[in-house]
Image 1 (cartoon, rainbow, N blue to C red):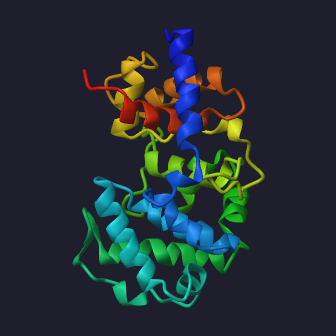
Image 2: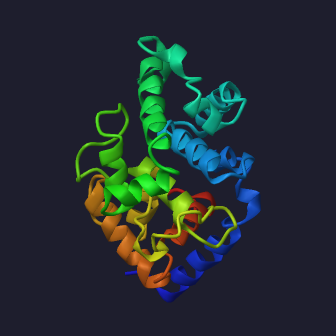
Length: 241
């Protein structure tokens, strides 16, 4: 059970890290390069897809990918700029191959030549946005297949699209309520939340994400994923045990 002092400290850290200064050193910096909804969606989705492991490695690989999309993400997808990766079994990033990049880009090509944007495709699929994205990108390497997964990267992408304060996140998807979001649960956030007693789960699965989100919803009823910044701040400022 969190004390009032802990809750107040989390509120303070959320305010301290949910600022424009957070953007440059975070993967969200890449979609912030763009202004059109479609470019932001594609940039954000592909960046979230590779958001595994060390942050510096993620930023470097995302930089290489965005350099390849030099004409803009939508033009790259609709114009088939990714076609050279088809069937290429060489490593792209961590356990992704270049052929995996082709597969996810080709799925985006289908979506953007069928729908106005990715939000429209998610709306047409139905259900919550994370589950809809799982369905839209089923069979793509790196897209979790099970309901038990915390779906950290998809949840992060959805947070970027749905949260509406306009500081770090974009708030472009207006058909979904920030109050319904689930926190993107990576190992760091999971460890911090366990230390605070938000969950007793031993693995960072969907049930743990739901339990942690429920605790954060008690602090921020309409915006539980603001707690993502708070737990980041907790990890930066609290000494290791």
